[in-house]
Structure formats: structure tokens, C-alpha cells
Image (cartoon, rainbow over all chains, first blue to last red; front, side, top):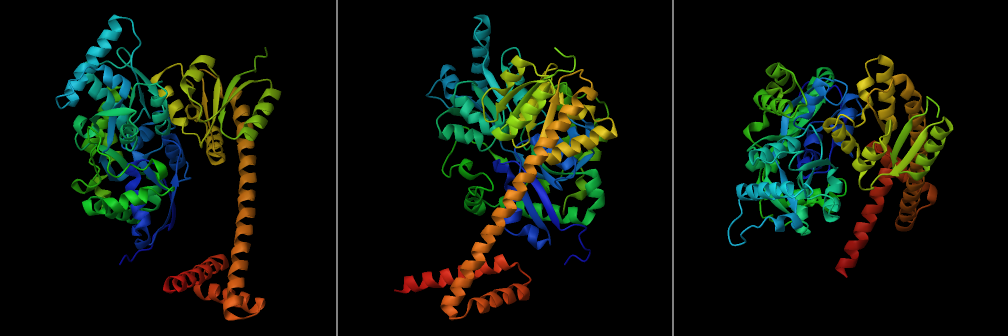
Length: 336
Length: 203
């Protein structure tokens, strides 16, 4: 039994309605927060910008965050600099690149063979080259947020196939909720986004998943639990209990026998509602993720990789990578 | 054209709020273009009309579109937070977030020129939020009264007691359990409904 009293027991945590909000949903619905003596309300936010700002200004105690978010906030990229930290990873991978069915059909694939991401990448490059030589429009791909694994991994994958964003492909920004309808309207030719939006495109026969994040960057940290440094300093016990409850949820999620219950839970309108991923859907390219991996410890080495991506994309010019990484990714806070 | 006149893009899904804010900014001599959220092509819209300021409802997922544009292109409006070097501006931004409104402004604009616009937006969003809170609380009160009435009715019918006795029973239950009267009333209703349901099944 915990002896010390939590500094604060009524808490508001923010999340975005994506499949990987599961650790927060499970910790609340299965009573892991309650068991830790915490009365937690979960607040569904409309944008990542809201998550960052509301945590920065204390309207939320903490939130599900994109892995690069606490780093970007600490560095003041696209925002006023507010020191943030994470003591727990919430998920690994779980994003994918989807092309519209129309573009996919034009890639000239041999329907008899299994299509690997490499083959598709090569064909996409040929398609882009052809378009460029003939002065045709560049394919347009959408991403959600600039300081995100989607943005970095999409660049990584395209560049690995010598497809240069900006030159061969036009990149545009769209919120996840608008991806499917925009793809359907033919205004974009594909996107890189978290689940369920890739599987849903296949389910509605609007697009094809061509590569999943786990094939681009295996076990890359996707979401973390983030708070401000100040909040963590003022609420050390509360923070520890939150992290323990979330870690419990992640371990629960790791068990295959719990998947039906998770699907049921995400169907609730408080979470994904009608956008919850369909039960028996298996995309051509499965979009794999992990909720539990090496105890979900946020290692600074992973943060350094993200900072390198920021530099490669021209978002940051700093030199002190390890120093920033160690200030933000805090392995010592992860529950044992 | 006045030198103080700026072009403002409003993105909001509350037509009434958008209209009053638009009128107020018009009255101050600004050019205002309004757009409901949920409309396609916000990026193209911003690129075409090149607003000095974008004011956006924080309930709109398109905030991230503006954040991406700011990160990807030098010409796109930047989050107002870049101007938050002074304490006063940081306070203003905090107020804006609490009121549920976010602002992006074109590079090179002086904070002094945009501050009045932001303050007008905050005032309108704040006012709207107050109205909403009042409406919600009235609705809650009505709902809770309805629940209590129904629970009283059930107790009177099944326990054959007076309205006063039924109310006392509910209040005692609430006090004993340290719960709200409405919560106890809901539970009483659930219990009666469950037993009625069981009765039906047995038949």
C-alpha cells in the first residue's frame, strides 16, 4: 500500500482519438487509475497543438504526446519554450503510409506477386520521375503534424527510395479526421498517419497501405506520456502513481486475449466511436504496433534519434543533442 | 486604407460567435474573411488570401494544419506564441487558451498591432463560453430535478408512502453514502427497473 499521499488526486489528462490512446483509456476504464487513488478525467482534444498548449499552461496535468513533442516544446520549436519531460513510453510504431486506390492502381504492380514495400517504393519513384519528365502534377501526400514520427518516417522512407519531398512529391498538412474524406475527394493521393486511419482506408476501399512504421523504423517510440518539468517537480508522488497505472495498462494491452475487450472499449464515443478499427480487418500490409516493449522505458538514446530527425528536416540547428535528450527522456522515472 | 487595418481569417464552427466577432473586427476597420471549420482546403485558403492573422477555434482539428504550415513554409502565419517574450503577452496567450481560441500571425507584424485583435477575440470566446456554461448548468439542474422526481414516484408507488417520506428516504441514503441526491436517485431508478425486468423474464 502506498504510504505517502498524492499531492493531487483529481487530474485531467489529454489524448487524441487514435488507436494508440488505448493505454489511457484502459487505465481509466479498467480502474488502474482508481486503484492508484487517482480520479482521472480524460479529455479528448481536437489537435496536437491543443495538447501541447494546454499542458504548457496547466489546463491539463499531462497527456498522451507524440514522441518528439516534449522535445520540441522544451526547445521552443513552433511554440514558447516550456520544459517538458516523459517518464514512460505509451506505444511503439502504429503508423503507416497509405496510397489512394487510384494511385496504387497506376503503379503497374504485378498482381501475381507479393508486393513488398521496397517494390512499391521503386515503382512510386518511377511514377514520380515519369510525372516530372512529362510536366505532370506531383502526387500529393498528407501528414498531420510537423514534429511527429509520421513526418520523420515518411521522409525517411521516401528518401530511402530517392523520392524527394517537395521535388517529386508535394507534402500537405491535414488533421487525421480529414484524411479519409480528402482522399475520397481525390484532393490528395495518399497520407502518413496513425491508426485507425490506414486500415479504415482499406476497409472503405479508398486506399492501400503500402508500408507500416514497423518496417521503416522497427520499435520506434510513437507516443509517450508527457508533463511539464514544473508539474513533475511539484507532484512527484502523483506522477509516479500515474506512470504505474499507465504501465499496468500497457502490460494489459500486451496480452492478445485482451484485444476483443480493447476493441469494444475503443468503440465507445468517448474514445474512437465509429472510427474504431474494424474487428476482422487485415490490411494488405499489416500495421503493427507494441504497447509493451522493454518496460516502456524512455531511453535518451531514442530521444537523440528524434533530435537527429529534427536536424535532418531543418527544424532545429542545435548541437547539444544528448544534453537535451537526457533532460527530457527520463528512464529513472519509469516504474520497475 | 488605414494603416492599422489588417486582414483577418476567422476559422470557427459556431456561426453566431463568428458573426459577432467578425462584426466587432469590421467595426475596428479590419478586413475579415470567415470560414467554418470542417471545410476542405484550409491550406489553399491561407495561401491564397495571405491573412495577417488567423484566429481559430481550439475545437477545430485544423489547428494542426496551421502548425504544419508554419513549420513547413516561411510565408505561412506563425503561432502567436513567438511573440510571448514579454510577460504580458504570455498572460494574454494563457487567457486565449482558457477561452478556447488560438492565433497565428504573419511574420514581421508588431505585437502592438495584433494585441487589440487578440483581446477582442478572447472577449468574444470567453463570453460565448460563459453562456455555454450557464446553459449546461441549467440543463443539468433540470435533468437532476427530473431524476429525483422519478425516483420519488417509484418509491411512493412501491413502498406505498407519501411524497415527503420518499424524499426523506432518498436524502438519508445520499447522506449515509456521502453521494449526491441525483446519483442516489439514479441508482434507485436502476434498481426498480432491474427488478421489474427480472419479473418480466420470470413470466
